[in-house]
Length: 222
Image (cartoon, rainbow, N blue to C red; front, side, top):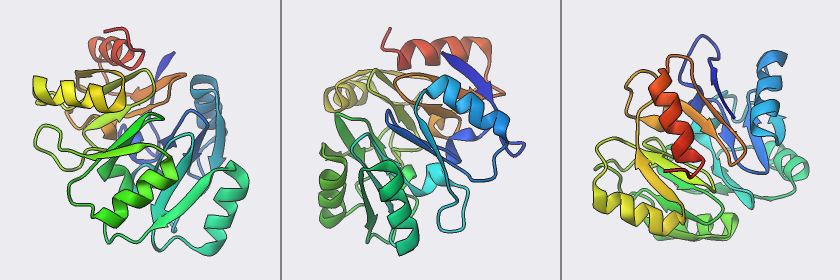
């Protein structure tokens, strides 16, 4: 299932939600209608929380079914709440890079991370998400979580990614990969797509051909 969505008047829905096959983090003040759409399309638990006084959950966090990494300044109260509600590994990252969703592209098979993360960061990601981790760039971008969206069925990335990069991403994440855009030609696909293996949400400005292609890719049908 794939649906269009906007939130706070924005088509950049990817910055507000952190989706996995086990849970989705969503801002605490979103309308019930949006919560219902999330539940209907993604078919997992929706946990509403403003983390670190921010609604940008897709920017601040990165996770999979096994775990979640959050910025170092996440409060103890927030950490305990996430752990109790999600029943997974939740750990703060010591890195000065706090936009973790922008620099980590993960599914339940593996994670691709920015070369700017250091060895300790990589070890934490590996332990918390319980997957192998590879440093990589996509289309020359270090913000791999912004220029890619992955679930356990497929992965869509920036349209300038090379054939070699697509092959490497596919081998790492163990899914089929293709390039694409969202929101009428925007190449930073992570900003406009929210997806897990059950369903897909795209920014409301996305065109029919974009939606059809995103659906094929993230359902592993390419």
